[in-house]
Image (cartoon, rainbow, N blue to C red; front, side, top):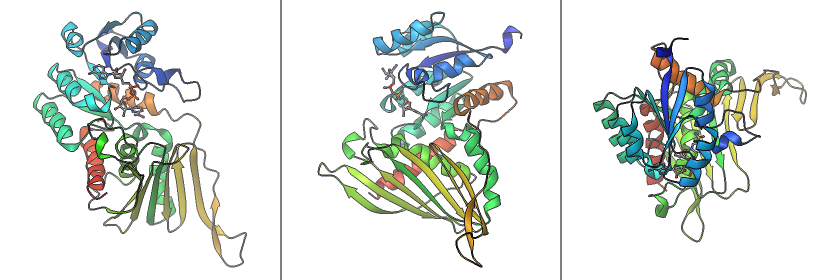
Length: 337
Ligand SMILES: NC(=O)c1ccc[n+]([C@@H]2O[C@H](COP(=O)([O-])OP(=O)(O)OC[C@H]3O[C@@H](n4cnc5c(N)ncnc54)[C@H](O)[C@@H]3O)[C@@H](O)[C@H]2O)c1
């Protein structure tokens, strides 16, 4: 492989998604940017940056050949990069993205959500367009084989009637007090939920949610909320957000006129209408033996998409536009809480 085929990358933010989730033995690996960038033979991860000395040192110990920087400014002064990955906390997306854009890499990989709010997100988009810097937003399920398979199977369940998408966690769904930190599930994991439903429906625009089932705890934080949309194809789409569950759950159930698909974390099932085993002359849903495979490639495929894009062989599978469309939906829901 000739040297010009290698893309030089920098990682900003060496925390969980930047580095340490890649050490989790239960997760499908690679599960962090550092591990995924290193696993791709076309990429050379040459620098890392973090303002947290401990996180930076831990990362550097595992990436000894790369340079480490304690400030974004010094990192960006050090050399040109083909790829800059931004995996800092939500409240630092705007300033980090603007700095990275001004260094004009050939591609930025930006962690979700794009920013804390639409105002900031649009600032990032404007700067990226002005400087001609493409942005790949890491809504990773778009690159995951199981969700891609579901996308191709939707037509087999007849006319879609409804989608029920749920997110369960112990993190508050929303609190005005956390606007500046982004520490609430509507934005934190809710962005994945609305983004992947958009992906499954071909990136249609969702407008005017009907928000209901809002429950607040004594501190005023929203702990439960649901939002319903009615698409122009007559599909009822309901999102349920729970912030008082002692488990993490992420699931989407698509019901068609001929069957049902369930997909989510630890969930992949397809059922079709078949002569019922329960009642004579009735049809019931019966599970089909469709194989989803164990490896989804959710992270490595995202990185492959970055390389294919830089090679000029593919378009980005998750863009600043799709990232902002998800953020806009969450903001629309937030306004109605
Ligand atoms: N795609 C996913 O599935 C997924 C999973 C987890 C987190 N995330 C997202 O990734 C981002 C980081 O989350 P995390 O869980 O890794 O958080 P984290 O706190 O574990 O790591 C963030 C790191 O960024 C560093 N940082 C913050 N501001 C910085 C700055 N200005 N310059 C340099 N470094 C800075 C912090 O010191 C920390 O080490 C968030 O946007 C989060 O929503 C995405």
